[in-house]
Length: 189
Image (cartoon, rainbow, N blue to C red; front, side):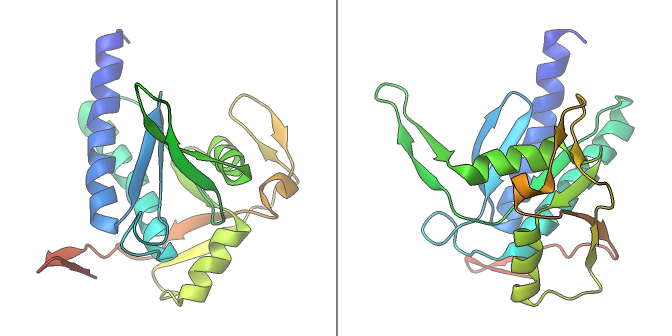
């Protein structure tokens, strides 16, 4: 595709991801090429740290990408990697300051995304545990443990589950995702 078409496609998709981020209380950290990096944390970065909404955000990213691809006639897919853990964030630079995240978690996220199957959400063990601890309704989505002996990127690179904190899970949507509505400055499901 010509560069202009690529920029238009990425801009369209990232615009829809931005809308989803607002809807689910997700903080967009940055975009790097075709990577959209976002997350939730404790206030003040985000108003709420609720891991089920991160899963909903990821599942919706897949849905809007598939819908956009179908409408546009373009064959574009998405891979989503989700992880829960600690990292360090801070503003870097003097003239062109940008907020960045650093630490092992970021490397693990990159591996989770790059080894996720096309149009699927892959969650780490710690992400699954955080969602279960939050008490999400089991009828909304399910975690299915990956059966492969190792993780494989789209470029053929092999990675071990230990690199991302243990066995990973693909997330399946079991029923339509709830949509959030803002009421008097508060979000409710």
